[in-house]
Image 1 (tube, rainbow, N blue to C red):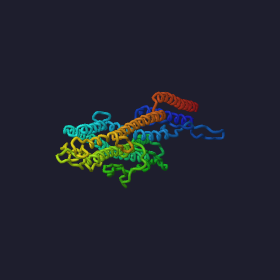
Image 2: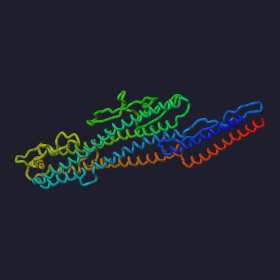
Image 3: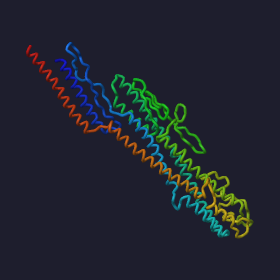
Image 4: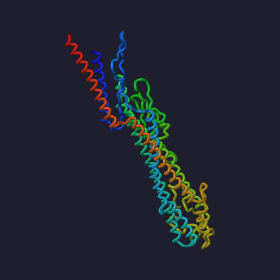
Length: 459
């Protein structure tokens, strides 16, 4: 009779725990990062006597959280890819609008008006109004150069500022991971799994994967998790490596990079995530656009000046050797009209020999619209057009890859949720099943009690 009572008690305990676990699952079905749990039971070790072995009912092996490690790792990998492309597509969309192309107010239109003005001067080199109009159109073109350059610099600075915010977020996540890691170790010291704490830990790992490549390894039998950010260890046991910002100057630009606080070395092997996206946007795309814009400004000022210095102005005593643009132009940020002619249209050189009506210098400069080659292109406008084309292609590529990675992420998350997520219908069915098991176990105890009462009655 005692064995029956013990079997019934164990069955009752298991059924109660199963009901409790299903109830816990239902209560947390909308909890972010929660993994459904299930009771793993096994047959109790039997006892033996001269007649054979006798079962001792059921025992609880463990309380397991349902999770697929492979899908977790794959989700984090794709999440890093997605956030890298997503950040670049956001920045690309913002940057594309700053070029203001195609429009009547973009740099391409301003360059066309610049060449048109030189043609007007060539048609009537003695007309002061045409010369004044040339200076006005040149100023508008210079403003376009500088506006685009300033926009690129602003985008660069915005990325630097975002780096600061990213560093703060990573430090906050890392600190939380180290604290939860310690709680897991303490909670599992008795051999019982800390499922809810591990869910919180995994949710933070998912958040960390937004910023870069993340991997997690288990060391030893104490439940210690070691987290790697890129190729560097960021969390181990209850300690975390803090990151900070290091400022440098590259090609005259202020650059902020994420480094380790303890040695100032840059976080390595970050191929994906927001950090990689921001760095690629700042150090590759913006740098390339700005280099090409600077090349255009320098080539235009150099080639125009090379012709202009050969010509003679319209002053009472015709003078040659004047620069049209400043002679020390280094890029789009400092291109300007030479001070000697800025407020004096007569100082514009249109004549090759100084004779009245001579327009050969103005014609030669106007012809640069069609004949000047920059890095293999047919003209200045073609060169700028290739830059705009590259911006459009890069933006389209970033958007396309963002959509691809987003689709992958949703699919993997759906697979992951199908395993770890809570199904209300399934848990409701389980509650009915476990309730029946509970009632059956109670019946065993009741039956054993009735038999025992009968025996006692016989005595």
